Length: 472
Ligand code: TRP
Image 1 (cartoon, rainbow, N blue to C red):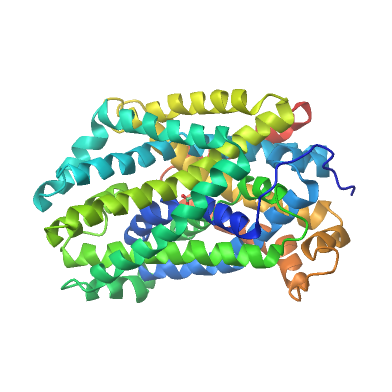
Image 2 (image 1 turned 90 degrees about the vertical axis):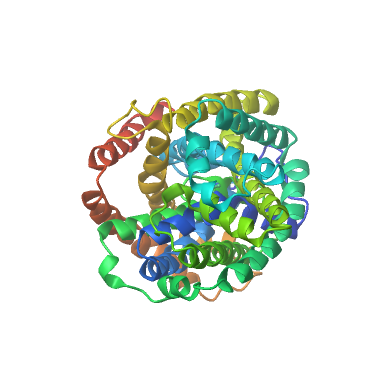
């Protein structure tokens, strides 16, 4: 395969800048908002164990596969697949559809985090007993969360308009370390609460009787979601990567950072949940209910910790959603030939509408459902439970079966100058093990979760994309 890349492409200004940006894409609401509540809902330790196994065996290798494909072709998701083989264009299209759909609910939660910064500062979260009800009232309100969602999306748009190196990279570099330190402080507070031990036990002593087919699919979807895999975000980031960068060590670093933040977030939240005597099945409200209680109980300057936490959460969300928006924008620029500014307005504008519907679906529009779920859940379940997993499978299949092994090796080792002793292990994982493992997990997951018609719809969408891909 020929190397492409005749177009002049923006590049990361330094190696550490790339790591920060890729880790910034990975570390987000997936780690801090979603991982703790999924862990709590899926029985604790066993879920964490399965999750870690998937991250190690499937996630890490898939990330390396995406980096490799992106840097080899120097193109965004759609272009990269098209370059390998036109029949695979649909995998790239799926890789643009997924972030677009994730951006149909992600800004809603990003908006909640933004709102909670102000709620913390203005003392609205100072009464521990009222915090749970206040959250419920807030997210079902037709106006307030919409206001914060629009503000949140506007910030994304501004960052992405400014371009790769100056906008995304700078934001990531400053804000990720702040987040990390803060999570450690909150974690220490949480595990030193009286009664926190039961939470730690719940997290680290697996109870296998709580594991079902759907647990594996939830863990797999979460692994892809959290690592920003399965839709071309890391392909696009890889395409901006310098030929000198060490791909395996970059993938390893990003995976370790992402996983530590997820575990840290769970340690911050789950022991506190048990200490407060609450039920683990709080769902998506978990982080917005448990942590404000923890901060409120600190009294005094607790509100400041609360504000700093939600600033960090918003920032983590921002560096991720910026990468989601960037995938859509890169597609419009590379494949449709429009200017960055136009591409951002078009993509960002549509996301305002989808996120608006999502936000309203939790309140006034709750009666409106598609295939049995509201708009918010529609976007969430379809991407997390189907599109990302299939997207990850496709990137592995394309690399394993449709590209030249020597080319891949050359790209991975920077023409032989970087040692990667595990190349054959990785290659066989990508070629055989991962596609089969995903197929098995998806099959048993789909038959055991309650949204079977939605799942079948998702598979049908992918099939239609595959059939019509030659026209794209
Ligand atoms: N990884 C991010 C999070 O954990 C979300 C995200 C950003 C993402 N880019 C992605 C998920 C690409 C899947 C694919 O919040």
